[in-house]
Image 1 (cartoon, rainbow, N blue to C red):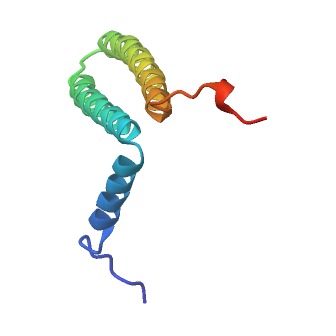
Image 2: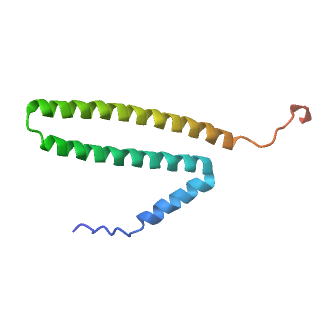
Image 3: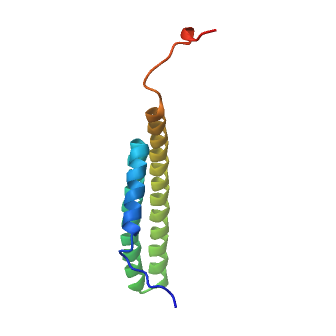
Length: 117
């Protein structure tokens, strides 16, 4: 018999622990990761709304020409939005990498003339 899955079985605790660990190890990377997840969530929510609106418009079509027009507009808009979203993610990842690298640098400098020979 399969075990039933309890939604409160500790998944939230594990996620919180993982987030806390990431933040403790590298707060800059954790912040960047959260921003990327937020941006993806926003984008996917917007796209889903547009997909549903397009579906409603398709279901209301009266002629094949009208259907082709709606599908053409949908594909054009979707490709533009996905391209723009990919560009935004690429910029965010590049900025996160740069910020994380800056955060990992040492805050003090050492002169090489103090090494004993």
